[in-house]
Image (cartoon, rainbow, N blue to C red; front, side):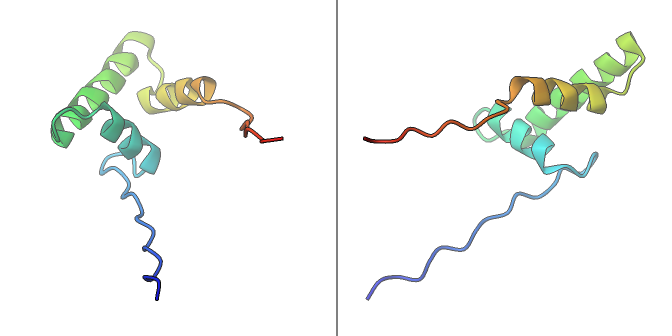
Length: 79
């Protein structure tokens, strides 16, 4: 018999902005399991954006992520 299908693990949203994309970005940025340090760096960068440009740091970061993401998913097909 085969084993049961693995349960899907859902990513918890970050404590400040309540967004799972921020958590995913911090997880990718994380080194040696130091999640609190990666969150501190990310939130610090958003604060610097807010101070220098006067715009909301979170919205600017989200716009930058949207510009960096591919707009169309390309899948290879074997012929």
